[in-house]
Amino acid sequence: MDKLTIATRESQLALWQAHHVRDRLEALHPGLKVELLGMTTMGDQILDSPLSRIGGKGLFVKELEQAMLEGRAHLAVHSLKDVPMDLPEGFTLAAIGKREDPRDAFVSNKYRSLSELPPEARVGTSSLRRQAQVRARHHGLRVDTLRGNVNTRLRKLDEGQYDAIILAAAGLKRLGFARRIAAYLSPAESLPAVGQGALGIEIRSDQPEVAQLLAPLNDPITAACVTAERAMSRMLQGGCQAPIGGYCIEDGGRLRLRAFVASLDGGRLYRAEAEGDLAEPEALGHRVAEALIAQGADRLLAELIHRD
Image (cartoon, rainbow, N blue to C red; front, top):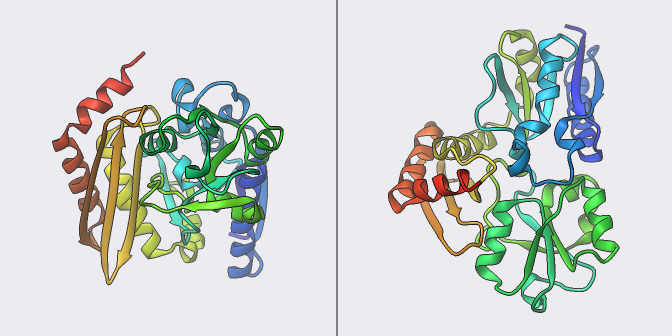
C-alpha cells in the first residue's frame, strides 16, 4: 500500500492525535502517503446533555467506523478512554500507542488544589468517574457536568462559570496547555479512566495489510495494561452510566491493576486490586472485576443503569 486515509474528528485534540499518527507512519514507511478525512460525530454535535444520557462514548466513533466500512478511510485514531469496551463486529484495535500521562489534572485560575476550594465552589468535569471521586473526598463542593472540547472547557473556566475544572492531563499536554495545570491528581486521589492517556488505532478486521503497517506503533506494555483495564470494565458492563475507574501498571514483569465502582454521589465506593502475569492481562482484568462483584458492585451498577 502506498496511501492510507485516517478518519478523524475535527476537534483540536483529535486532529493532533491524527497528525501524530500520520507523521509516525510516514516516517516509518518512506513513500507512504497518509491523508486525513475530517468528520463531525454525533458526540460532537450534542453538547447540552451528559454522555450517559445520550448514548455513551460510541457517539464519538460511529461515523468514523462507517467511513471505514464504506472504504473512505482505512483507520481511525481514538483516545482509548473514549472507545467502547466492545467494538462492532468486523473491527479491531490494530495498535495501542505508548501511554502519555494517565492522571487527571486540576485546572483553576484561583486555587492550587481541590482541598483549597471553599464550600460551594463549582467544579466542572464531563466524567461521572471524576465527579464521584471528588464528591467522595471533598464534601460541600458543587460538582457539575462540563461538556465540550478542551478549548471550550478552558474558556468556560476563564469566563468564571466554574471555580475549577478537571481534565485528562494527557490532552492538556498534547495541546500545549500543561502550564494551565494547577495540580496533578495522583491515581490514589483520582483513579484514571480505563485507557486514559493511551491512543488506540482502529481498523477493519479484514485488512491485514493495514495492520502490518501499523504494527510498529504498538507499545506492548501499554497494550497489556489497557487490555487488563478494558477486560475488567467489559465484565462489569457499566458503560457510561456508572463511575468506573481502572488503572494498570507494569512492575518487574508483572501487571498490577486497581479499579473501583462508585455511586454517583461517591457515598458507596467499591475498590479492588490484584497482580497478574504480563502475558495474561485479560485474566487479571476478570479477577479484579470478580472481586468488585463480590463486594456488591454488580448490584450498584444495575441500579445506576436502570435509574431512569
